[in-house]
Length: 112
Length: 115
Image 1 (cartoon, rainbow over the protein chains, first blue to last red):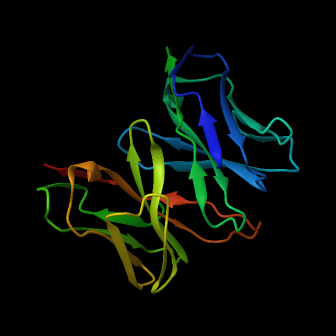
Image 2: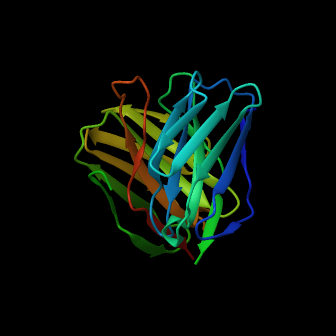
């Protein structure tokens, strides 16, 4: 069956450092992968989409990589700030693209 | 929250009672979804809709039913609530983008407690 794994342990880093979160998947051949941010008590918010033919994508301080051979995506936040503290979810679409399966999320804590 | 509202935002109910949660969108998106989110399980799809009166089951549909009589409204009903249905419920909407992909936009969530 399809499976998406994210590190369930919280990631604690110091302000100004780069945070790197990992999303691994099995039994998928996704056309793209998405990353979402979720703050406590709120719904997830879409951040970035990276396609299978894109090795890397950037948006401001965010950088996402997608290695379809390793079946892995890395999500980087450079120059991290306490406001970046949240849970980050990766999501993969079904073949039609109209449904997503979400990973369990990784909680990021950025300390001042 | 991208023109999505959920009601109620919080509800406490007793085991065995029926409960209906409402999701309302103003974006005219074709797809609507109901998820539940629980510690240790993440977001799991309950049901989704791809148009008025067109719905299908998700991963954890047992004990839940849905209806969509209008594009803007998607209702989730627990016919007889059980304690295992205590959770946070999120509605999401989606439609195909010009790039061919779907991005989902989530409502604020409903916290349901079944005692």
